[in-house]
Length: 250
Image 1 (cartoon, helix red, strand yellow):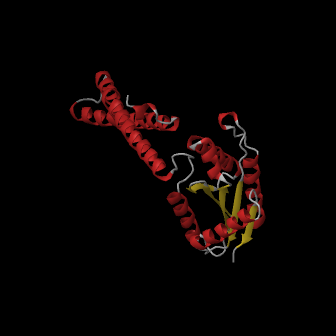
Image 2 (cartoon, rainbow, N blue to C red; image 1 turned 90 degrees about the horizontal axis):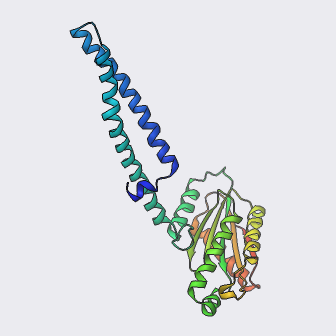
Image 3 (cartoon, rainbow, N blue to C red; image 1 turned 30 degrees about the vertical axis):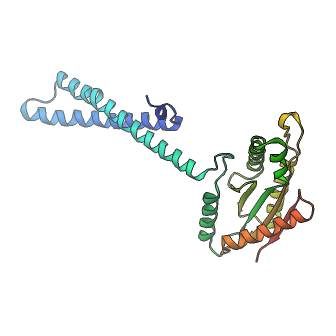
């Protein structure tokens, strides 16, 4: 079996066996019905031998063929899913990449009706990250980014979007979050990163992030929302780092 076949998820195998069984059963029933109709034309109806043949033929020929075709279909579906994941995911942190994150947020904003609740965009940026690369090397810097990404994903809700916008900057989109909720999530992210144990080469290296955020009302364009959140990120950076700066966008 191919590598993709071995790596198919359990639900795909269940779908293959379930559909194969259902189609094969239907084929057997139809085979018995049509065989009986044909036999009634030339004799008194289906006999034992005819019944056996009408059952065994779909089982022997149809079942394996259906299973094979369904397997190939699931392999193709799985391969396409993997390609979509690779195309939309940042290779290092397993977050959405910038294009996928921006596209997903923009589509959500475009779908929002005036009566819908708003939400928030957070920009999370690692503090003084250049010093991590300079002191410990880029491999350690990559490890730090992976730790930060995992901490962000654990701190947000299951429906929130997390993307790597570039370098050490991440975006978090909180649908249907007011300014209080957004501030709580941002503080949870900040705290979870501040307590990370990062010890490259056995040397403790504290990590921290600054977070700028802006809540929005339906109809807000992504570019404006990003500009406001980025503006408040700089405010957080310029007032001491390792902090959150939020605002309610008009």
